[in-house]
Image (cartoon, rainbow, N blue to C red; front, top):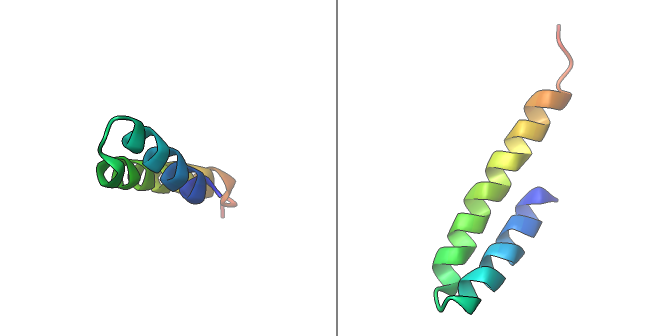
Length: 46
């Protein structure tokens, strides 16, 4: 879910600034980073 939200939010913000592709890529990177943080936090400790 954070990846999809990052992509959509980034594309919208990028479109406002005239750089939709750059916004999409930055949103994708942020979404992936948030997803990794959530995944690492929710992993059970062996």
